[in-house]
Length: 96
Image (cartoon, rainbow, N blue to C red; front, top):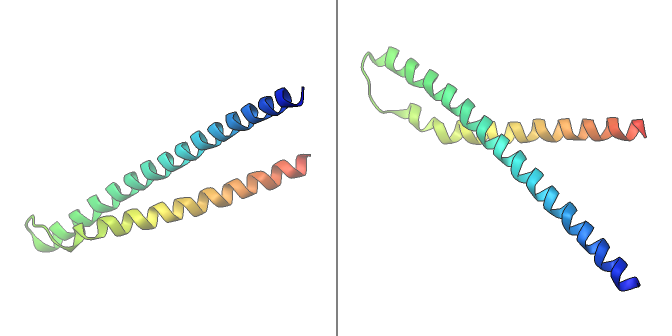
């Protein structure tokens, strides 16, 4: 009898782990997509500014900003998500 209970508990724990894995994958996917969108917008602005200063199209330092902008956006979105999830957990604990 105890073995069957243990097996059932292990299966439930496994289901919870799979759900948490999918939620983490979803969170990372959202962070990456938003970071890519922000990077695209900033890059377009930087290219437009560089073109207006030069007067002709060329490849320059504005393209070196792409990884920096992506990294900063990715980290900031992570901080915002962490802050919002901590706030949601506090609100949930207050309701109980």
